[in-house]
Image (cartoon, rainbow, N blue to C red; front, side, top):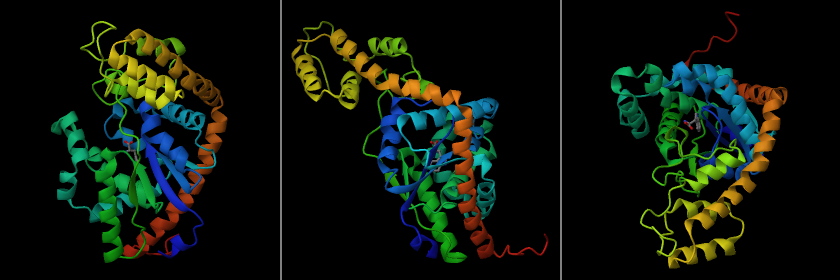
Length: 340
Ligand code: TRP
């Protein structure tokens, strides 16, 4: 673990699949936390393009465009360009490390991974690829190649972090002490409920408000939002807890007194849903409009995004190359430059 000591800052690594633009759920669930942590940690953000291919190879043509959308959202939300942003496929050392780690991975352990089990259930056992089946090992490589101290993720990713830790310990014990044992870090904001009030906000469930949404889209989504289904008239006492109107007000309305006042009046049946919604629509528009205009500027300046990624990829490759070289040595795949 000699490498750790020379670091002036602890290292953080996390990332996303580039499946399109981000929504409010991404913001409160993870990006906000990253913004908070980015100064304290040397931060690495992986854009996991190959992970998209594990289950949507037919959609993979859009991945390149999605990477710009994602980068524009990151930067518009306030992640600093000085962080290391990199694309998974552009760091081939990760693929090499995946092979090595696959030798240390028991199939029975993969079979027990609850997150993967859920995904397999969604696709039906017959149609899944070996690439999907083994992606937890690939994700362990995404992490271990950079020897981070912390990996901030959502709860569903914890089984992958656990596998990562198991593989790191095993390698250190049986071959060579190459890996730091990273810790998963859960953010303090829970999963954000979608506009349907039923499930977590998610692109595929059609219950999301995106950072790219226009003012009138935001307004329409808010006006159609699920509230307390038992409330027929504005004079009926309403339920505040778990009501997405108030979940969003609490998170995005800077006027805390107004929110409390709405809540009291809602419970007492002295304010209508429409009034609360109209105000929420303004609040969300105030929040999203400046981000949207920034992201539009970034999207137009692809050259700038390219330069941020190029710098990130270079840095990521440098770090990963060193790790993988230690792994090769540990395994005895160590021919030096004899064959060059
Ligand atoms: N699986 C993560 C997701 O779906 C993306 C990801 C890939 C990731 N590699 C990672 C997250 C490494 C944290 C660390 O969002």
